[in-house]
Length: 381
Image (cartoon, rainbow, N blue to C red; front, top):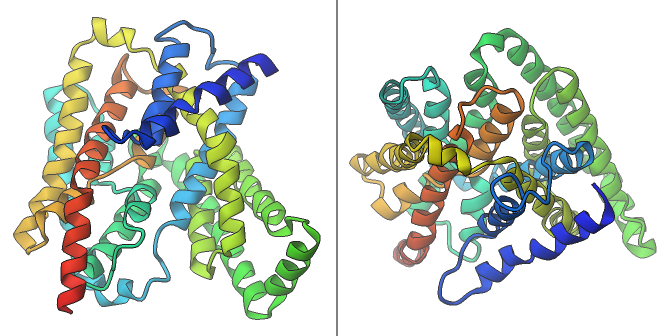
């Protein structure tokens, strides 16, 4: 990779936000960035080579940062988690059971052994998609209070479960690596809480802000990349390292200034590089010779909506039930990890992302209904 290609990626990645700002069709930013990667990568003009070591490394940094933001969006400190914990946990468990059944059905229908991976995909929710869409929406209504713990559990557990589901042949290695990364993230959380409780973080924050040193950002990146290095060393995806560190920061409370800095670094540079790289690594030409991959993507997307939508039987409003099916981090991780480890069939990575896009499209369409529901419940309360 050279500066000309890097400049090209940054320039064309503007298409993603441009599509989101459109008044006629607000396409999620990541979809636009994936489309750019498809056009310039293996599917299109082949200007970008996903196998380039520098490109791949920058994409890994972006992936870790994207998952860090996803983890930091999990509302672990929200008081509503305790109020709706029992019902939310029960719903998450119900979705998991339904997803296991649907995963087996889909795997048998498409004659492969990826039932566990499909189940994790369909059971997952994405806090990084859903929580920003609820910004400004009151979360005090009964349905919203019960939805928060369901979302947090589904997001966290599916990300932890994915390494085991995607590569069951090396489950012992994956378990060992995951436990080490989670233990290290737990130690980081304990350290951050100690620093916060003794007031050290606030002192550093004042000095950093007064002198423009960005000390909190530097320390956060050092810790994040340290966990990512441990993940690579133990053959675990950097996805888990980024998400676990995000949870640790969310548990202590992420300073607003740090949140803005990390968001700018991710969304302004490394995030677009990752999603463009991911698009460049996919080859839609495989779908021409493997049309069943299209059917698989539709099956995964519809299956996720069915598994989550079935919770209307527990008196969860249907717009909210379908909204919890929105997924991004887990499908992206499955496509990325599966491609790197050569565990997926031709076209399967694209099918996984197609399934995710279906859930995102439904969530986007229902955002207005969910907002109205939340406001009505809050007013009634």
